[in-house]
Length: 385
Image (cartoon, rainbow, N blue to C red):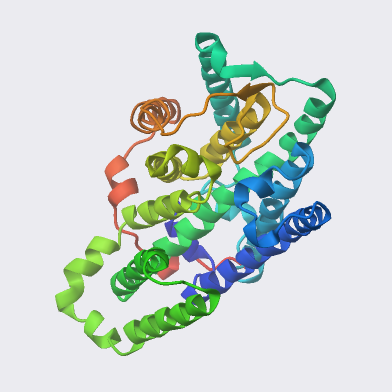
């Protein structure tokens, strides 16, 4: 199974912790050019840096340059993932991508072109049904430059997200569920995240309070994994351990984190928090696809098509991607509706899963999505060198 093959590589919890730090550091390094240029532009125009919001920053640079610099951080983050798996886990890119002997590029391209055609068709259908909501934004020169940037950089951005969430974290959290202290660690982290988002509404949550809060959380984790270790390994915690030692845990956790990382997107401010149902639902859809197909190929293709064709076809003043696309959405929605959120998550995604399941003959849904994560017997595998 896809998650269980992480046992074939070096999979100590601290390796994933250090790996995540390496990946985060790579993303931060990738953000430096964008941040530096925006600050230089703001100073040049006499803007107050302290009052710059995300929407203002996204519209400050020329759209093609803005898109390239935004996506650069993801590209460097992807390099960070590959460095982490090679240096810390002795894992190959193929091994992180799929349980098959080699990456199935036919799967990647099938998902890419299938969803590209469907999503483009739906966009054009909406254009013809509601022409007043759009204006033609096409300019040949800027559009050709956009094509070059998007075709190269967007797949790197989506691949970063897939390798991080459906790959590195899915496998890392999966193997961690075999640790008896995982349920308590998970609950501490869950409470910590909830409190973190609640504190800004209660106090002036400045950066030094955040550092202090991080220290408190780390102390709590150490206590859970040391002081209470013997208690957590006793038989009375067996039922709780067995509940968490299943595939649904990494599936739901990575889907939720994937969705919550989009909470700062301009779309959330424009459409409301209900759009988070779409983001988390998309993460769940991609995660189910990965587990059922025993690899990330379909998720890689789908995600790349979703973002690439969107970047080329349509933009809006309130979206994360500000591009020289063919169309510009001039509508000004104040909240997400059924078509934006619930139709994709509860209608289209299940239909797509059905289509993929028939094409690739998926079976054993219950075990792959809810089965126990088990380390193979030592004689059945060896650590990859």
